[in-house]
Length: 433
View 1 (cartoon, rainbow, N blue to C red):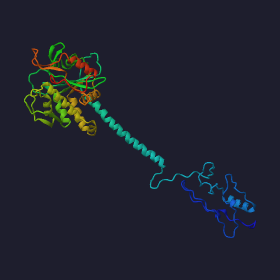
View 2 (cartoon, rainbow, N blue to C red; view 1 turned 45 degrees about the horizontal axis):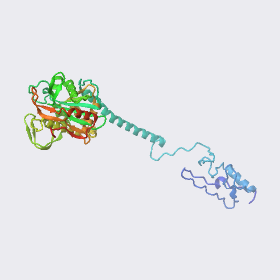
View 3 (cartoon, rainbow, N blue to C red; view 1 turned 120 degrees about the horizontal axis):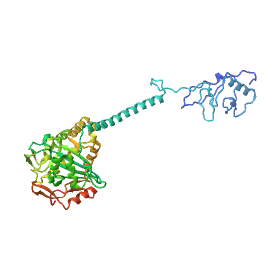
View 4 (cartoon, rainbow, N blue to C red; view 1 turned 30 degrees about the vertical axis):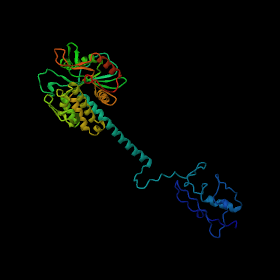
């Protein structure tokens, strides 16, 4: 090698480094000098340590010439790439001559926004849609409750007596001659075909006790008479006071449904399936029934609940059928299904509230709790039946045939109901049963 000989142009010796991506880092090819030119020692070929020093010191003017040629081509990083193209690594200072490259946009997006911003935008849209759906699901039942609350009829029914343990509801079925429920037979005012005492104890099984309409009781201000006379003489307040005196339980909520309204409720749930094991043709209730189970609608369901004289068990049998009817209605009211059919939901509430009267403190939430209690009482862990009965044809004089409760057993029976001490199952019923 001649000292004064011109060295190959570094820009021609080192090929241009192809564009790099974060996932690929091709090794820089070794420069080959043209034929006849002096070779560059390996120590000066670009494998320099950080700081610009090579691992081995280059000797002689050849090394100096190689270094001068590399300097003429511009500064290089330790990997041999021109400055501005190689990303920096930990411990290796970045030597860029310009701004960092922009992220490459995916093909076919047609948007100038970075992908991260577009993902944020799509996520915001999804969240908004979910929020709207949740609001709609919540607003519908909330609005329905407010609407139903406005339709309920209220009455001043409660006595204001000191409360007893647990929660007690009195449910009655009114058969007013004025509401078209039964034919006009000259009876003044209304009667109660149904009186159900529903009690939820602090601990123990929920109980649903039917009080026969002809139960012989003491009516405050009127003396001994049939239970349903209390409603005719003093409406809901006198009936509540009479039942409290009989049971020793303070009534927390009162609910009354006109029996004529039962037709609308049954029709709103598109009929119910009822069972009775005897064939009946009763002229008073207008019930014509073939022994077995049948799906019936409003008019026949009402007759089923009213029929008494053709039943060998009289009031006891009627009370059982009334509980069966209410349970059948509740069995058809599936909240999940009603949510999917708002029109049916509205029709049912419209029919029920149109015939319903409750105490002044009772709203839709309380009614919901009452419905759950009713369902619990009719379940495997609940109690249904009547108080202990001594006679179905007790005739004390002046009031005709009445139902006499057992005077020795009845007080303790209601105490056990109050305290939740009775075992689940059926209680009371026919004398001697």
